[in-house]
Image (cartoon, rainbow, N blue to C red; front, side, top):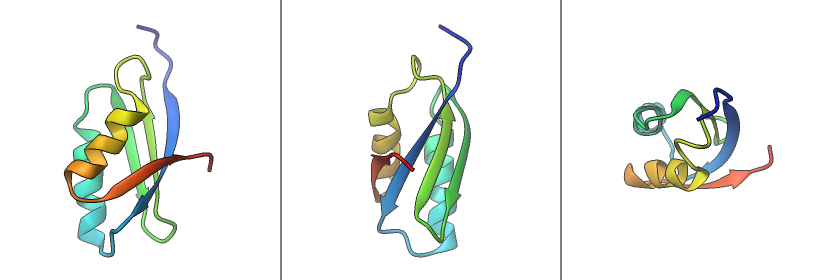
Length: 76
């Protein structure tokens, strides 16, 4: 596996409180291969630094869905 991280930006829907942010960060951050997660509450963006060989964008979206929110990949 290469040592290169990829930054993926997701757009999220359905979260409306700061505790939602913490749940998303905890769920996505627990995935093997994820090195950093930052949820931007005001813009509903989730930035994830991860090893693409270890964790896919689909895995990231699934981790968000697991805590009850919808996310999709976004170009920005």
